Image (tube, rainbow, N blue to C red; front, side, top):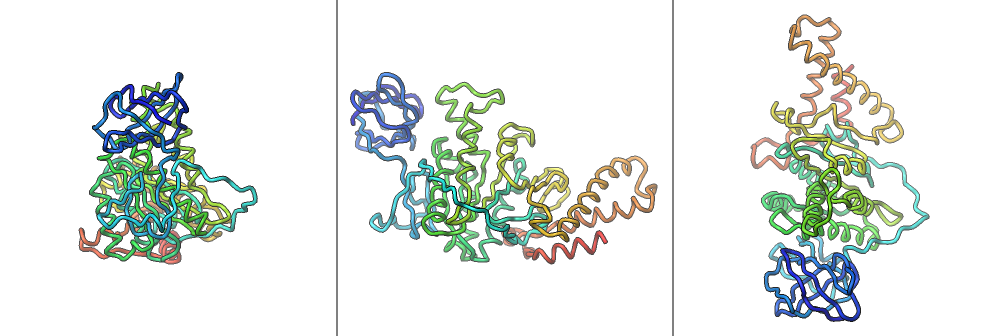
Length: 434
């Protein structure tokens, strides 16, 4: 199967085939001495294929010959990848020696594994994070999804790093981190933190940071998920999957749609936004072989929680932690907006009656606190009734109680990080509300 380059525009390359056409998702190699890789995005009438220049290779000209590989993007999978950093094509990025190919299997990142019909959901298993506000408001349940939502600079990455640090310390399962379109500095800091705490032995990392083109930023999520699926299905492992940032995945797909000249949806995003999100989220699932528990950060453009992309991602999650700029400005860390943070898993059947009843009491106090703030701004706290004044004081104590020092910030602040067991968290709240 051979073709010829007939059109080049930015990352778009059209290849004309006279005989057999390639399949969508296949990798093509340009015969230009550089073995430039093209990914078939879709096929057009007349035997031409519209392809994406995966690595932004500049050594391309019209008339160059192209040959098919009959393969998609395949990344190495297996125990040798643990503790390493890879890009969207499975190439190491950590400066360490290349992997020995003879010892590795390879997996197509766009191939979705088959589903089984005999899978039964196991009893909920609560994983302690050591972070009071998460363990109380959005319990971390094995095999489920939690989202950390907020605008720029409110602490999404710090909270994610703290979760990785605290959960990985237990040594249970494997941790996967997908850096999607975020800052290079943050990826470097995370790698150094894991290395210093001897946690790389249970972690595999994939980076497609904001310096990469939108093709690699979109593919990096699929590459990380494929690796997680392999360890879940072939090694029967329980996986902790961290994605930072899921909104950047949508943003990368939107950039690609613009480059391809596709008509956007009413919200300004790519027309396929729903299926793009759904396909990725469906792969972050559990089966009879193992579980994938995911933590996904979601950037909120202009602090607008009603953004269509943010709303669509939220619908796929079980729990949502909302970080607020107003809370951050008060010096509260983590800067969680307690009134907007929600979880569908906060039920008596999962967390028990004691935890559930406390959550109802806390939410009632916080709602009352919000309504009393506007009254106090006018007449002052001393004019409140005795009951209202007592409830207002309890709410302030609760907010202060959920403030916590982070282990991953110790080297910057000089303050030792805190870890609270779920029992300690519940006891501290009982002392305030009762």
